[in-house]
Image (cartoon, rainbow, N blue to C red):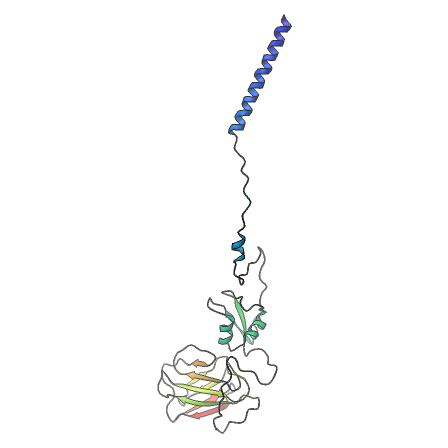
Length: 256
């Protein structure tokens, strides 16, 4: 009788323990926090394919290859938002090919705002004694008969062609032509009778090329330079002298 009671007690204990265990497991399954697996990122292939072909994206940690360093015969231009290689080359009287070669550029459509470009003063070395004019075809100019004029021999031969509207600041200008080989005008000067001096910036004037020096204020270009003088400089009957960097007079003109 005693063993029978003991067996019944053990069975009841097993049933109670199993029920308690199952109840705890059920509650744990019900209230435990779910494990959230993050979804894989979705790549918008259509948007990726619409990236501009000139956009440059560097991998993290990569740095662009540094460009050429300036030398004593070069200057630096910082690219602005409206700059193109064509406009920069035009401003410095260079060809696009010269600008690309100097800066190691292979794609002329890729420029970045703030990019530093090396500008070779006077352009790259020429293969021949004479250079092709930049931009449009050269103007067919008739030499002005002066004591210093001579047939083109591949050497610079500058002449003052005209002084327009002397005494009128808004339209007063001096027209200079090059009847010889290409010349770098940086350091040349125009001297007026009252000793006023205009110094030319770094500008390459090709054979048969022409440049106009305006007395008033304006924006310089490869064909027009502006003195920024507050008053008219040239007067009728006065003389104009064009001198090279060594101070030698290379051309003169009497204002009509």
